[in-house]
Length: 291
Length: 331
Image (cartoon, rainbow over all chains, first blue to last red; front, top):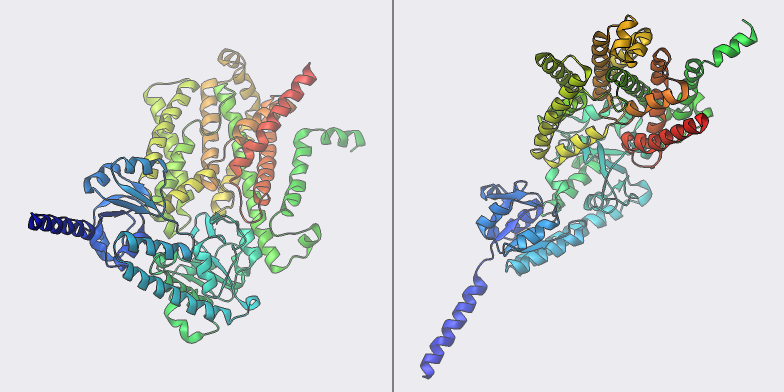
């Protein structure tokens, strides 16, 4: 009798172990989430992605089950995920619809660097990889610390004013409550839109001229398009245009996605911002500069 | 010239509203995020000079677009004898929207900004041709049938636009939405010059045809008895006004309300004689849109509102005030 009980107990504990070892099936509807999951070495947990999730290259092999923040419910149901993880949902009602399919929906913020750290930790817990998550949190925090100490060496009054053109039709830039604003600050610049409360806002040409930025960064403009920016009506009087500090042709995802490559994005911004101060660093980032 | 003659000339609304145009222009030039007083205008810094150049181009664009839409609206209302007719009635705005959206989604707008106005103009003219062709195929010889064909083509264009929007990414969608909302910063001086020339020629033509247009508004039989050819005249009015609207929409995107309301306001204030109505519409529509755009530029420090928001917001109550004033005066 005792041996039977022992066998049953062993079987139960093995079943429990197997259940806890089973990898959760995850769908990511956000490109930055997909990047983090692959960075944590848990790409095999992903069973679906949004059409915007294109990095790393392995991500493209996954079936598309939605757009960024927009699930295709039937496609989603066909991959039977345990979790749908995203940083935004275009239609809040779709959360309920996904939950009715038996899927747990996790909506994460991505407005600042703290949100990124929280996001990595949470993914570490969900995907049973807290060690990798802690390592990434350490790497990210350490890199930010380095950038901050470098930025602090430049007095606030002499930091260059940066206009980052998120999109050019209409002219769209970022306000103070965005991670792009934080990236500019960590890179040692001052975002001209920092006092605006909204996240991203269409701005007027007159306002840009009044702010008179020292650096213009247009990630959405293709490489070699800086001349077009310089030729815009009236812009010739802006400091950045006069001093030829217009940068285009940048890998947008490093700036527009709050993910593992954000640190690379800050490094790019720093190269552009301190082009004059440290000429030896500017070579890598000067391909898109106005000629 | 005696004093009474000068007084008589100045009492003519076309003259004094015409004199009001440069006054408004100078006042609006001083308004904007980048502060400038009258004295700064005389001796501007290089940055202010650049800002003023941008403002001047924009005000000019607002005048041309506002004038074109108001003149086109007055012509459409006369041709269709319908007070609700507006310049986009022959599907011009639908065709222009599809053209602009196609330029954005095909990536042509990334190559050059010129493609958006060019495609929207082509789209508008193509839609107009389709409407006129469709009306001809149906042997539709009344203005109402042409308007119906315009509504059909407009609906088809809306479907196409919805399809384009459904397959566009977020940046493209943003571009299409902003184009649809309308903006008066001119992207090319050639198109603006062409639009300005079209406006002057159309206003002159309509003014010369003023008496015949008056006859048409009394009904076809009366028009015939007065020696006018109502069908031919309706075609001219609708065709030319749609071309004017196509030019405006290519320059600035779709700006509503001006073409519908300004002719009504002018009729209420100065009567419905078309020889006077068309030039007054040109001047008042221009001033109205210049004012609305200045308001849209100045209301927030960092950003601009789409001018269409302001045209409806200011124009609606103003129109109601004009109507009530007229009733009180008549009563």
